[in-house]
Length: 536
Image 1 (cartoon, helix red, strand yellow):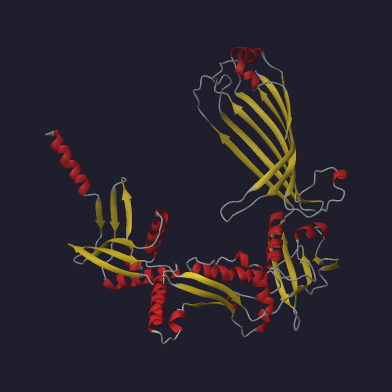
Image 2 (cartoon, rainbow, N blue to C red; image 1 turned 90 degrees about the horizontal axis):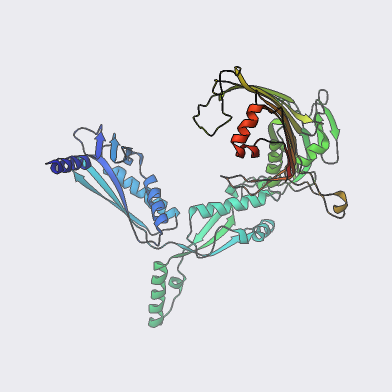
């Protein structure tokens, strides 16, 4: 009897695992979408990704909102009333999506099955053979642009015998736009390039009176239809504004190091101007040295304008951490192929101050914690930041921390209300340069370059007074540099090199009770002693 009851309960449970809420009354409604992919050489992951892509092509009125409760109960919320027009539109969207993947001859159909008022729609996608790339070439009518395109042909994202996709075509166009803009054509855009394709079957254009040759031609044509190919060529779309095809040089670089919104580049009354070999400096106050600016700005007069150097300069200035906003305005000179670059830098406040109050509490019953008393503590930390030491963008941070730990009398009733106190000071100096630690006599004959990265010096000193137990003084020193590694859109890698790290700990004023604790727990001698450690 019990087994029968359990069986009935399980049947009831599994039969009611799908719940529909707020369905249209008296109308057939969409309850399920499914996909069948026929053909195509896909791996399991590729097939799963293709199904997700097809699901994303559903019309809004064919999408279902579902949720899961208790891991096995599926809830369908507000299903739409079924309309075949939306299914047909979804199938057309899927067909277009397959076209963008290179399957020009794919076919998408759908079938709707109705059970009571529930409609289940199955989309069947017959993939067919993909359109493969037979040849790819550049046919730009400008010799200078043609030469630049051919220099990087090995880096093309369009490869022979690969399926033609929309992403590959757009990627190749954008790559060439970046190439041209990095070589002086700063006004060049994707609208100036077109990708042309030719799917003509050459066998069908031949004329022959020989019937056997005609049969051979028809056989070759049928083979081409079964394995379609396309010939691609990138061509130049001549714009109405022909200056988009001009190559520009940098005339002057104006650096407004303490720019205030509303400043006029031509104002000589309120702004001081000084001309150097690389820049025209304009400022209200000379708060930055020329060398610091030169190390971060890679754009120079009489150079070919480069979008890469433009973005690199903006990145360097942003990483310096001394400006709120950075911007570079490009100003064309009339009737010339030259531009002026105006670097607008809004500085941050030189000093920054922060204060924080921290309260912590932790209850523990660990009997091995021989020194554990109260774990309720209060600490105050203040920090003072100087962002621009020596007008070189060198940052120095002072941190002062003081804290106490209250006693809960876990070590006896004879102790006071304060278990321990701590006072610490730390200093961090960050130099926005990759300093060379190599001795000078080893640097002879080696070309020095402005290498990316930053150097740092960290020092700290702390005094810890564990009442009725011990006093501990610690001093730490380290210096090194942080170098940028290979970065991706989702991950940034930095390398940290520390040629010297030193730590000194001095334990003194040990009480008799603390010595007894060490005697009873010898392993604590490794953690509580006077030591000096040096390393890399």
